[in-house]
Image (cartoon, rainbow, N blue to C red):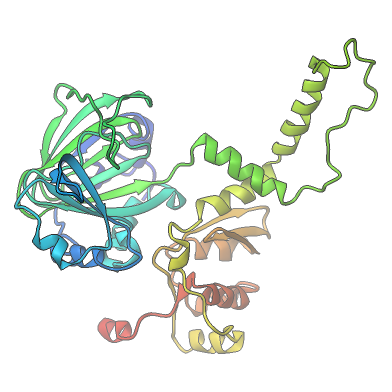
Length: 400
């Protein structure tokens, strides 16, 4: 596949056309993007995930009640839930949302492969929502790119155009629902299973379930805010800077007023800050780490004992293979023809470019990778930290 290859999931647009015309610019409705789609899990299975400890889930009820029984236009509850929660719900006007389902269900994680025309490190997670008729989370705005794929049932989407960041929202609820929402002409659609809607950041939208068992798959993409970026990069750099690197004013002229912060002093401080921050090599190392930080740090489970490299090598040479742990994030950057950094779950590990590229791709992690210098030790370390794992019992049998 090349950048100019027409992609059915983009309605026949190529990756280059989509990125040039729509990505972060304007919405796109794609009928039949996944024509043979089958929901990767049932409503009951989604509800089961929402009942588990450590899984981020929300229940949004319209015309609900607070803990004292007082009526509320919107009510938001956070998981984990139990059977009692679901048994009390009415027949309509509520939505269950479960975050990062791709971290727990391999069939959901496989959907991400369809989005390989975008940088893998830009992916955040896949959220799945279930709603009976009338279920909604209200008209709102997201500050990230998202593909909304209809997995089952029908959902009506109305778009309202770009919205200012300070647009009024309804007070008193744990949702950023817009006070005012006006539908843009010709931006009102009912999505059927397999249809998909792309929305760039900052565009108001409102989705309402039209049928029983309405399930929507939301593929979201992470993007740091300027605030997060500046703070995080400054913190990263601060850990590497020596205490001797300070404000300096050697050679200054006598001040006209010793109490004044004059232009010369401000310029010296400005140069200190800018010269410190303007370090492309350090920026690359920070960016790789921050963009591969796992969504949930505690989801990665380290090995209790270090893996002997010789035993790992023997297992791989005997036909074994490792898998990238669901929820782990990989990226890489080359320094030159022989040196690269493999970024894994918020860390940066030096290795050869070929090995870094292979581990950050969908390439099988088997004995072939041992041909790269230092591969066995690096792979053992990734296994120890929980970024890689052996297949679960029974998977090999299923494949046979």
